[in-house]
Length: 242
Image 1 (cartoon, rainbow, N blue to C red):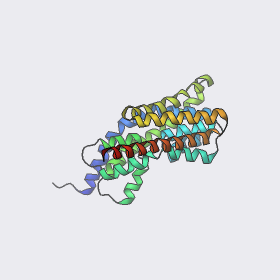
Image 2 (image 1 turned 90 degrees about the vertical axis):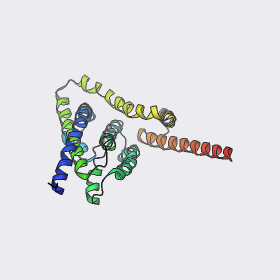
Image 3 (image 1 turned 90 degrees about the horizontal axis):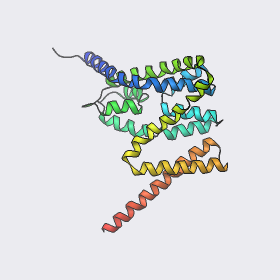
Image 4 (image 1 turned 30 degrees about the vertical axis):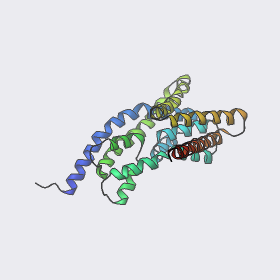
């Protein structure tokens, strides 16, 4: 008996849901902590959940909370999170090569839900990925992130203030978790992280720039310097082989 398109899409969606369960479980502590931190930052329940609904980017949301705490302006926050999430362009491009020939509006729909975790699941799947599969993965992970963010805020309201403030260590733990895997596979990333940290420290301690602009400038400056060194290094190697 031939499988109709509707049955195939339903099957892919169910498979996507199964694959997304592990992501939903992994989001639980991070989203819960985000909700707690959002409350200590001064966000309302509606603002906390709205950020998860419309942004859906863990690292970007954590950075935003940190910048809001330091009194950074809106423009610097938007620019910083944009730079932080530039990697999503690369992930989306790679995912597009692996995805089936679906309509553009379907791809645009699930592109919103591309995160480090959903991309990893899709990229490691055997064969191609369909829109149905991606919507299955994202529906579970997205729902998990939004719901647990709200629960984190609610739980935070009943916790002692000292415990709420101590949860801010999760911010740095998440950044380290994002950085370390990349550092293991590339010395370039290590140089980039070290330079960015040095520049940011100089700009902040000296008072040359505000916190938000210090992060943006340090990131851009370190990226440019590392790429220039890489460019000239390759140029010299090419010249030596002639």
